Length: 328
Ligand code: NAD
Image (cartoon, rainbow, N blue to C red; front, top):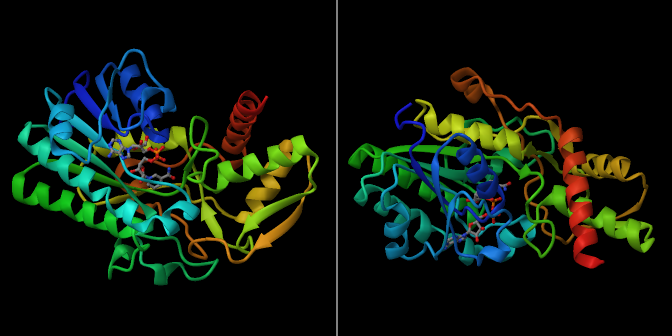
């Protein structure tokens, strides 16, 4: 491991879903943590009293310089981000996250940080490799030749590349994970940025409370995905930061499920059955996407530890309570 434990660490995007969990884990390990996010702290998913919590817009280089000052390592998670409905309709906004990635890299170098971790995405993968529901799991080499998700995926691929060149040209220690759909408590469940697991939980809860008998599904429900529980994501993120693999590496679950299967699961947890109304014109993303975990298993010994049914149960309970709190 290159930087010592109990060092000072900045988490960019610390007010977000994964950032909030990561800050908690880093504090538990004894790090001094600075969490930085653009949102006012009342909108952060988690505010850890033991962290230094800073509200700043990291598209600005000055804010990045201040965020990195006195720190040894950075986890760069800040990005304009959401599920398919958001990224298909906000391509320019997604691409503007390049300002954060760029300025955090420049600041990390100028402030003499030892290491920077970058949260990339499975959206960097070539769309041609994801055209059927039973497409082969995506291995790291499948990002090239480049044909990523328009907007969001291009930004991630470009930023990955920039991390590589800061390492090669400037000697900054960079690590990159390609996250595949992360879900769990303390994340987005309404408002348009939520992803399929949270959206389905919310719709089922909504139907149960209102007595509705139908649920709207985006696409034909046959599209396949894998979903990684947040605890596995945080553990994998820390493992990747401390490992020797310099190339981008998959961090995801390989438990494949159709969207219809995910609805079945949530219905079972909730104890209801709903009639499905398929919206074929809604954003649904690629037809099939799964993570090939051979590299991360061989190099780091990491594999997902939480089954989808268990993680979804916890997620459903959390969204259920949030829903009740919000709408009561
Ligand atoms: P999130 O939206 O909950 O968190 C991102 C945070 O970044 C937000 O709190 C947002 O306010 C903050 N942010 C955005 N722009 C900023 C700026 N200019 N200055 C300061 N803060 C800013 O998303 P998340 O699910 O926690 O994702 C974290 C990272 O992981 C993102 O980079 C995302 O692209 C990546 N990722 C997530 C998933 C997933 O399934 N959640 C999958 C692939 C990649």
